[in-house]
Length: 66
Image (cartoon, rainbow, N blue to C red):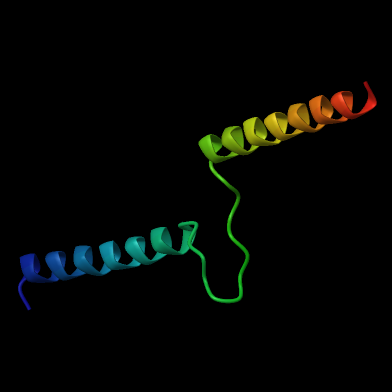
């Protein structure tokens, strides 16, 4: 095998290994496993949504008392 062919094969092999490792770290929903932590935008959206629900509940309880 020539030197350049061996060099190319080695780099293809290492790229394949790198892709496997990167794919393993992706937050995917795998069967039987919980989802990875939510991203920042999702967390902000959830926080905003829970705040809005809390406000509606407190307003609703204020109307019932008065």
